[in-house]
Image 1 (cartoon, rainbow, N blue to C red):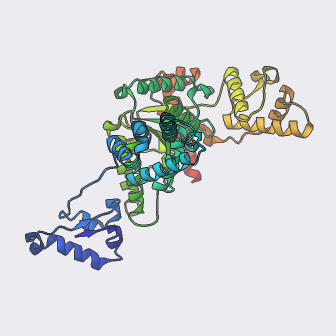
Image 2: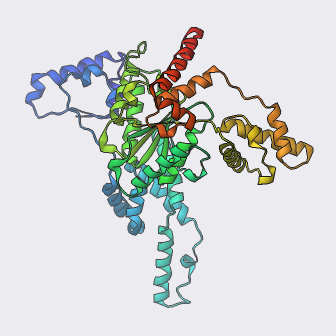
Length: 466
């Protein structure tokens, strides 16, 4: 006896207690056990069912995974013969989708390619020989089979976001690490790791990275550039929490099921200190603790080393549970800093001018020896203000104008920025990521204690203000 949409029959709350009682009685009935009768409940996630039923010891769980590469290849060959010669590539690029979504994807590809004007399809067979007709027909089919990676990824992006509505954002990065200004040691490490992945040496790649530093330092951009350097897709986990009982855990389970099949993939969790929860969280019926357990279990699964690369981005790494930050989960802790030296400021100005499409030759650059340390976001703000002034005055953006704008610009900085920077320094797992002066101070116990003491002072002030 088959029950589809079991989550509507026996939800995790107590709305339909009589349904739960009936199912429990059936599962325990000695009479039903003696007859050749099996009850099958189908649902997308066990979290959507009442735990009194799933944890009773009577049901047997059968998990049906997403289709693998061979299953997708066979589906394309059997269902869409014109694309059979390209089925292997399409099967690789369609990782992470269900067969239903794969069918939708292939139908869209067929319709879009079929609408293209094809000279071969309008050939008059009376005007040419039979061999030419056959050649023209073959060329028409070949053209129909041509599916660009960009076309397929665009369709896949829309289908996957529909498969996890509001939970995942699918991104194909167009940047590489060569576009990152500053962060030399971090770029060097990430470039080496990307080379290991391309060479197939996945056992030497970290399970995940913790990118930390003050606001506006470029954590998200660095993660995108790493994914683009490796040439793998990138997904960002959006807000998966829900007010309904069991929905939050079910949403996370759906996300993890898709991510497992997408690999290799970079998974970005922004504001990680607020997103991952805590084992000791209370006040939400244990939801945060269960979410934390699900996420920590997946991050520590070494079977996915090099296939699922986690990026936890946060300004406050000290607020993350130590279970998440330990080796074997988020192994590499990389603190990022505002540009300090004149050369770093120059590189950041040039990078931000390219991003803002502002033509900034060397003669238009200001004297960076007179510039204070500031974030990339602040530098972008100065450049955009300079562009605005140049349009209003009908003058080019030059060194004098940039210096004038910078002299009136006030960066919003406070003790919180210093606290965020110190938290990143103390979380660092490799001293080579630190600026030279901080690295020298942190190399001995006295210097480490100095930074720790200042961090504790700022943390105490924060606790008082809260």
